[in-house]
Image 1 (cartoon, rainbow, N blue to C red):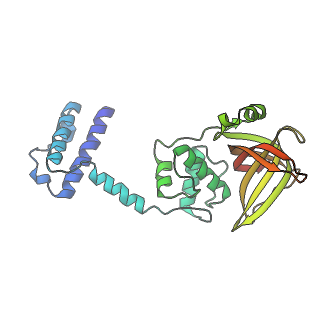
Image 2 (cartoon, helix red, strand yellow):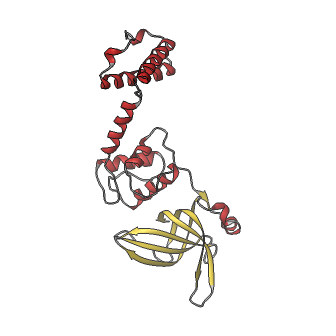
Length: 257
């Protein structure tokens, strides 16, 4: 049977299920013989008859499936940093499949998994929390889930000349760490970096990221690779009273090069 016929059949079976749950199937004026004997057009006519019967009764053919989806969503357990097990591993495998996460699935929800979830949430238009709640998991495992877009290569001159044009876009770049500032916040550490992307003290950018306690620190003179969202210009005052303005990036991934 053609694809259209399969879709009609699925719609028909959904309608039949709804009727069965309502206890009104016996009241239908339509006799239902072997459906395999029907052509696509006949199936469409039969489906229309079922829809008409449901409409007359004030019911929705998709109601049963929607209720089932809502019940399924209620059973989904949120996953977040610190979570571990088979559900986390399945989540990681899907993130890897869609290019949001690299490496292997170890079943431990750490900083890299959180960053991958945040990246997916941004791409899917969801609230960016880093926690894989029911809505995020449903969107992630859906057939139409968006694959990750490859970050753009940093063009320091272009972004410095026309900063508003590139705000919100994701970039990937490497550079040498010139300065590190850390501040503890709960069970994590807020880290600020000045990174020279084109040699010593050349094309410097300001990078922020959140490091979990226990994870390796980034030190001055380390070489790092950053994937992050450009969030506009950042201006700060120097110790001698001057001001410096740098492009600012919120890192979604930061690794030693």
